[in-house]
Structure formats: structure tokens, C-alpha cells
Length: 358
Image (cartoon, rainbow, N blue to C red; front, side, top):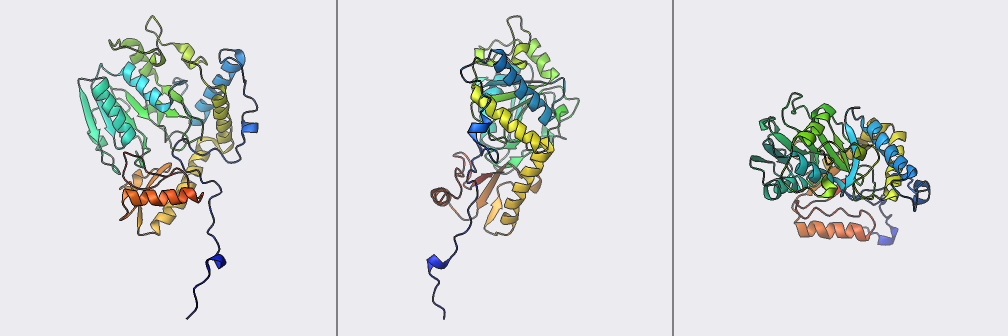
């Protein structure tokens, strides 16, 4: 019988070149360097100066180009990340029709809670799916407005497509796409409002939200007059009730970080160099397939998403069978201490299991 091998003789398993697997803020692009990425930042200059407005407009133009946003849709940066973008549209648009909130993870559930408890909408449908599953999207009445997440960050469940949304709908569709934008195809004719933040698929900085609105959303903004108080950071219309077009042409509601804008521009230029949206999707799917190959070979691990067509390629949520939440935390703490994987603890409101960003 051979004696056990000494631990010092065993080769250490390889570690990832980058152990940053957080689902937001996500890892920076490959080769990122603040010295080069921020070299063009107009430090100490106003965002209202020509150089500041120029940076903002450049970022919006690149956004439109890479995401293939239709010419008649409007694009703007708004305060308070994706959360701010979703909330400002809920408060300004919802009320004249019934509302369905389709949700299957914690952030979508937050939109439902606000629609019910803060806005107190009189005709409200709670269309809820369990963690790991989509609700019955075919049951939605599109005479009503719809709020939904394209990709559930904390459940790893995405809509496989948007074919279930009719082109001739009467209500508006408000889509929280924060963990889908730049990594999944978006059929814009199905979308009236789309929101995301820089910190997800492009590894940008936090606190800044992005808003894309259709002509139908503009019409609602200008025609619906709500009695609810509207904070300044939510308002997209002027004193005459018309759309404040300046917000969609380089002006912003409140003072942004020009460093963050420079960071976003750097990420967008990198995205363009990868082949634009198609290249980014290919890159994300390549990462996802590495994880899938591993999961398929391990009987003790599975995806949280039940239907293979709904498994997210960005916020990949895994389940380790027969482990409690405390045991999963012990494992993720061990990976963190050994610089193998940072920030892969499950969301406080989600089931136990490590989420990986793809």
C-alpha cells in the first residue's frame, strides 16, 4: 500500500485570472486601467459645459448604436441607477389603465410592492412566479400596462424571448432589463420603456440609471396628468406638461459624475471593439457554456431555473443540492478567503446557492 502523498507534492488547482464574480457592480472589462480609461475625463469641469455635454451625448450615441435602439426612441441618463429609472416611470406613467406586475425574483417583487403599497393602484394584478420559474405570461391582458424584468438577477431566470408581447397592445410595457442589456437580444417593438444601469453587463459604475422610451411612452407622459406628488428627480415633463427634450439631448436632471460617464464611454468603446451587441452576446454565452459544462457533469449541482430555455446567461444562479444556506455561506466564505471567487453569496431574499456573473 502506498503512503499518502504529502500535501506539498500536490499541485494547487488553478485560480481564475479575475475572481470578481459579483452580480453588480460587475467585473471591469479585460485590460481595464483607470489611468487609460479615465484619461479624457474633464475633471473639475461642469456637466453643463460644452465638454461635459459632449461626453454625455457621446455616451448616448454609442448606447443607441450598440443596442440598436430605433431612431424614434429616446435615450437618457437618470438618477439613482436602474431603481431610479424604473420608479420614475412607474410614478409618471401608471394610473390610467390597469397594471400587471409579472415577477419571479426579488427586484421584480419590489416593483409589485411599490405599485401596491406606494402608488396604491386600484386595478393591479400580481402575476408571481416561484424562484426558478416564470409565471404564466400568456395570461396577461395587454389592455393593461405591464411591468416585468427581462432577466431575474436573483433567480437566474430570464424570458427566452418577447414573442408573447403583442405588437398591437393597448397598454405600455415597462421592462427592467438591468441584467439583460448588452448580453441579450431585445426586440424593441415589444418595449415602451426599458431601464438598466451601467454596473451590470458592462462593468460600469453605480448610481446612474439608463432610460429608453418609445413614442407611445412619450404620448402617455404628455397626456396623463397624475395627482400624486412628483419629486424633481422623477420629472420628465416641463411646466406645460410636455416632454423635457433637453434631458434626452445631453442635459441631466441632477449633477452626474463625469468620471462615471468616462468609465461608461470606455466600456462602450470596448463593447464596440468586441463586435457590438452580437459580439457581447457571443462572449456571454461562451462564459455561460463553461459553467453549463461543469454543472452538467456534477450530479450534486443544478441551475435554479427549471426550464433550460429560461436559464440566464448573465446572472447564473446555481443550487448545490443538500446544502443549507449556512453551509453554502461557509463555502462562499472559503472561496473568498482564498481569492478564488468574490461576492458570490446568494441574495438575502433568494434561495441558497452561489450566483455567478457571466
